[in-house]
Image (cartoon, rainbow, N blue to C red; front, side, top):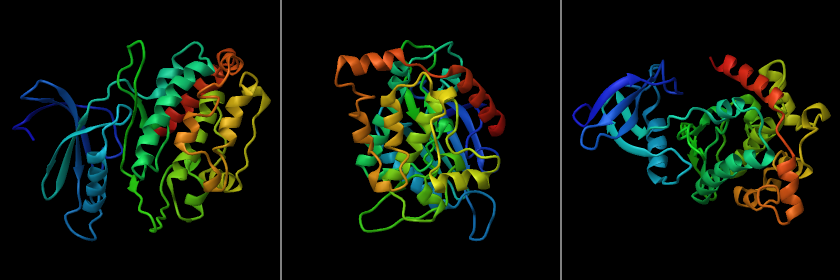
Length: 304
């Protein structure tokens, strides 16, 4: 690695930091371009508890190598030894989308849709290639840069992603309790629709500052998800348009096959208005910023 890249300071934490490795800023010697180098410790032998399984890292790399989309983190280079894999990734320096939004005084639905539309474009690209992310949550939705007129969304962390195959069922107990779909908890076959449930949860939180299924404990949260029990509380959704609520309702559906796809989301009238009246409804409706800031502060506290 060091023959081709100058290794600089450590960057913020990542899913593979700490126990399994670190992320460092690096500069490509031939071009002077900055990247993020993710050092991932791999298990040296079967039964070892240190590091990630080699197959898990190889799966992530295989998926990243297929991806070339403006809303998805890019893999630039790769180095591997017996005990470690180094992923040289596009440098994403704008921080998390939710942190960026929490700093704003106010945000209209129209502005929120700008961000959501980019997320959906990235997810549609993945799904067209039968790739499911399986870990869509605020921590994995970043900004390329923050101090620009139109921030660019980047979906990161493909550690749980899977390339799905026709005729082969895939089950996994993976993800974060408040964002996972009922079929994950019930250990039923997963699909691209599993990601769409997570998009529904993210949209609900973005508009209201409430998490639709959050309980006092993880067990209670999981129970709420399986029940599919949520509502639009008036105190948090008083400024929310009916179209936005309809968008969420078509994603937070217990039966995966009945959820909107990413492509269908992009032509939903809330995302792509069919009339001037629909467009006006979006610009007149706003995000509950007071609640959103509270949610984001709690979320950051839990993560840290």
